Amino acid sequence: MGATRGRSVGGVGGGREAEAAEVAEVAAGAEVAGEAGMAKSSGENGPRAPAAAGSLSGTRENLAQGPDAATADELSSLGSDSEANGFVEHRIDKFGFIVGSQGAEDSLEEVPLEVLRQRESKWLDMLNNWDKWMAKKHKKIRLRCQKGIPPSLRGRAWQYLSGGKVKLQQNPGKFDELDMSPGDPKWLDVIERDLHRQFPFHEMFVSRGGHGQQDLFRVLKAYTLYRPEEGYCQAQAPIAAVLLMHMPAEQAFWCLVQICEKYLPGYYSEKLEAIQLDGEILFSLLQKVSPVAHKHLSRQKIDPLLYMTEWFMCAFARTLPWSSVLRVWDMFFCEGVKIIFRVGLVLLKHALGSPEKLKACQGQYETIEQLRSLNPKIMQEAFLVQEVVELPITERQIEREHLIQLRRWQETRGELQCRSPPRLHGAKAILDAEPSLRGALQPSPSIRLPPDVPLPSSKAKPKPPKQAQKEQKRTKASGHLDKLPAPGQATAVTAGGDACAPQDVTLKNPASQDPAPQDSAPQDLAHHCSQESLTSQDSEDTYL
Image (cartoon, rainbow, N blue to C red):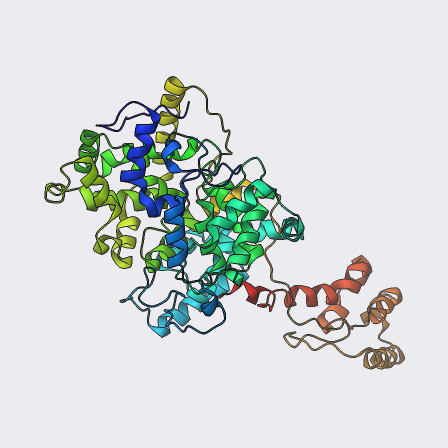
């Protein structure tokens, strides 16, 4: 069913083998086929050869490289024993990539230090009062995500935006349980084969068997156990790797769950039907954004899957310069999949949107090569982000086009085999979808005080119990009993080990007050105030 195409690739024979050969030669290439993982792995006998796969025809094939290519890939990997033992030194850029490698960037737009500190202060205030900001000032959060999340708080902000933090709190110990489970052998071998392909020039993944590859294995294995009906898709590996660069394994796992279930549902399922639908949506929206590019791709009969699969399934993590990747992900976690659509439309518009640029794209092969080797200027951080922010593509347009393409799919191919949950467009939609299940996001206290120790931040210093008793005796002796609360109420306060503030003692109508809440009020106040501070536990979420 998935083999039928909305637009066939021109100049190619009708069979699946010819189509697969064209895809392998034009769209995937040796490197993309081995590393991008744009299709599901079979999981039975390890990776299959792409020649017999029909990778983009909606099947669950593994686009791993052949034996020769895999051997060359392993030889070119930096994860050798000498490097693992620390004998090789490399210069590392601020993102963790080896200077001079493919992921490293030479010229970066640095944010002034004073501006960065101001942004950090604003983000700390938002994260410590997250639910209030999301309820009343979501537009402000969106604007700050568009400006870029401070690097020191990016991992923590991604968890709050995606709802991964809430998932972790609702499922305590779940990741550890999955981590200790043996896992399905048919997925473990495939995951291990893919580990060294994920950002081999990054310091976390440079060494075979290093902590980065170990955590990546743990996260991907845990997901196959958490969603055994989906298993493992190779495109999930770079997504998980990016998350691990910014947070520990457990937090990265729950963010991966949110991406797969809320942001991009169905992308990593068996038949890849969701990505095929989004390819048609992207092509239809392109007609409104750049009619020149749309007409050229239509004339060349180039299927959207040939150029957008890696873009969308990896959220541009393997396409853009790293500074642009992080800015795109900041907006993606806040606003949802429309950011992915906007980035794709911007790249297509500036790569194929003028007659001058189409002079070098006379054929199908030249056009796809143009999209595979994009001009660095259109991927530059400031230019790309500005174009994405200004592009008028909304969630409503995407959903309307989704219904149109879904109706066409049902008319030509029948019902979808994979029933994915509805897609949620960003942090606000995720928050509104589960309001009753969401607990208040408050950091755990980093300093726990005994119940009889007053808080330094209290406006009125509570008096010690002995001093309070002496004052009570003097007051009784003076005959001003009408200003004191009931005897049982006073006993409850002193028995609690912490005296109330003066305004709690001199109440106008003591008989109407319930003594039980006064007993626990100081303790509750101490617990509430201590939870408002940043904590050492949450400092684990803050990766520089």
